[in-house]
Image (cartoon, rainbow, N blue to C red; front, side, top):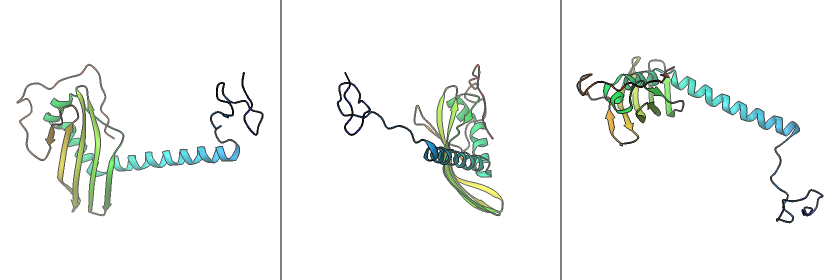
Amino acid sequence: MTLPAPGGDRPGPPGRPGAAGPPSPPSGFAGLLARGAFRLALGMMKLVFRIFRSSGAYQEAAARALADPRVRRALGAPLETGLMVQGGLQVGGGSGRAAFATPLRGPLGRGRLEARGFKEGGRWDFVILRVVVEATGETIDLLEEGPADGAAGPLPTPTSGRRLLP
């Protein structure tokens, strides 16, 4: 048996007299406004990520990480960049600065690309450019020269995968 909720004729859930149940989603104009605000915010986030991922700093850092044999050995090949980017980017004319982190994924594991750099005269120079391997915590410094490609054995190859780099 269900009892009516106080102040109304809607019954509450069984075993909890007076409980009215979960609130209903907004409807009418309020619901339309809420859905529109959510879609606008989601669209703005996508636009910001797209702009960030198309920046020279991101493109250069990602290309160097994806091509580095030490990263490919640790995470497998092919590698793909994640969709999310955390950090900041300021660019104006031939100068700018960037500090960001983005996930990397390969068939053998996951990692995080971290970069901090400055742009002068149209050229990006990084002061931090590294990949942190999630499983081991190993840090691969992309600013240091690593062993020549193939020096530590062949690169792992998956049976499937895709490479995402805008």
